[in-house]
Length: 265
Image (cartoon, rainbow, N blue to C red; front, side):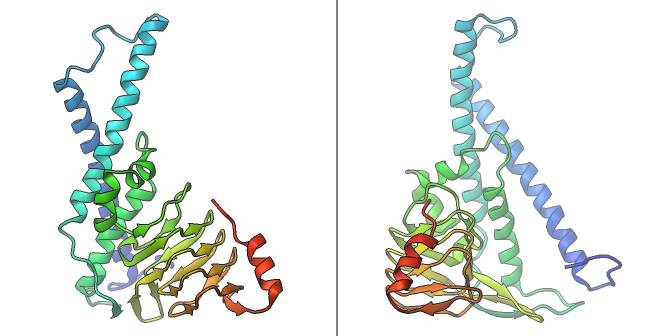
């Protein structure tokens, strides 16, 4: 969407406000995690007494172990702050909301934008928060992240799928998502935005770079790599879909295609 020479009421100002909020939240998360983690290490007396400058190997190894623990705690604090910031934000309701120039967006759209800032901070965590995905998926943080940030999931993937609106996405057990797949809980049309839950049941296989939003994929279905599943689509049990837009494929050759086209993490 172009924002050049935008008139009053155009999307430019909303986008600029979103970027400013995103900047503020990112800096707050980074600096807050840094300050809390460092203060806790000082309180617990965990810093080595000797300086790292000019250290022997033994001292350097000691520092490396302490810094590794510091990084681990930093990531835990970072995820915890994401959860705390998410708690006061109401979850948007499903439905279609108009976006008109010169008129303020519906509160559900604003809530979604606030959650989107936290989702971006989660997917694009700054150094040294490079373990955010692992920390979010492992107990005990997993038990806090799922009900708040989402998605609600009975599965785990080795790599981090791009799940937009994770609070609007639910994954069953044994769901495998290929690298680069994008799963969303909203989509836009010319005059507004639609919030619609994406539900993926047990034993579903989603191929690499597949794209979907506002869909229901039933148990045992397979989505080919690169498929684009249109909003509102219901994929039946054990069906195989592929293409752009994705369509149901029939015949024994479909099963063979599914096994080769669907990427496994």
